[in-house]
Figure 1 (cartoon, rainbow, N blue to C red):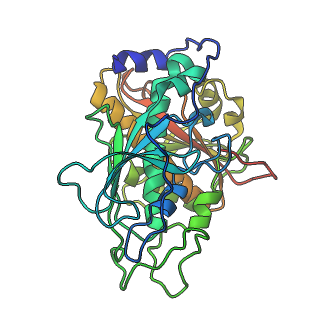
Figure 2 (cartoon, rainbow, N blue to C red; figure 1 turned 90 degrees about the horizontal axis):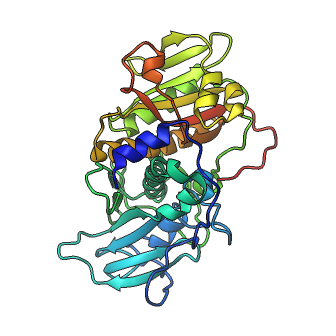
Length: 384
């Protein structure tokens, strides 16, 4: 597939065709399904790791800790398990709907301790609704799944987990390596126990990294339904942008569109502690048009934007930019949640040449991903 041509078409104003069948909700793996056993002391708890990152919370498969465009969840996961895990070493296909694994064979030679989750996609699922706009969304969804695994590892006190999202391969699109349990960097003592059936928080006296989520946070996080009214504080917006920039790997640049009293575009200043203005004027109505006509964006409290990925980007660059964008927005969503904000990822963008709109050369600085923010939840029912 020509990914450069696919991205150009996805960015065009051409509307997708009618919906087609999405196919199975999860990939059909060969062989019998197997439960994930409880972890022995000192072993990596794969049951907990997957429940907190990829497992479906209901029978439809729509509600999961990882965000997905249209709640279609096209990301498939193979687990390469080494020593020190709650499963014997080997390769397994993961079924997130039933929370089961299917043995696929032995581990490759030289497999390190811990688990490597390899992420691929069933493109038909997303294409069934989004048509030719599917490929950017598939890559963003893969980045969100990688970030969900990173957050789950943090919540369990294992790590540092290591993402692989350089875009150089199409199979897998990305991977995350989670090592055996051990003291988190900067902490002392053994890893606190995690009971798979309860996901109880760490004891109050257990040392915890400041940004580590609790299991309950990960299971409760959902994308807020619009409208998302109310402007975030400058402090909250700064922290969300800082998270996106740190997680984005330098592949994209990040800014945010804000409304009154001083509408415009802001970005994180070089000192990392203040916001600087990139442009004055109301940008949110234009963003609503560019984001597949989602009119509610014109009234969102703020819209965080990752931009870059020029017209002449090759396939590895396209994959890398979108994978990192999904990863960064997912982690920024967690930061927004920590600030009490409602948040919703926005992944489908057409004619969204932000660089040209700001007076730069056309085709160089496209919006790749977004995160809408608001302060008002308004008793909304949340969904992923």
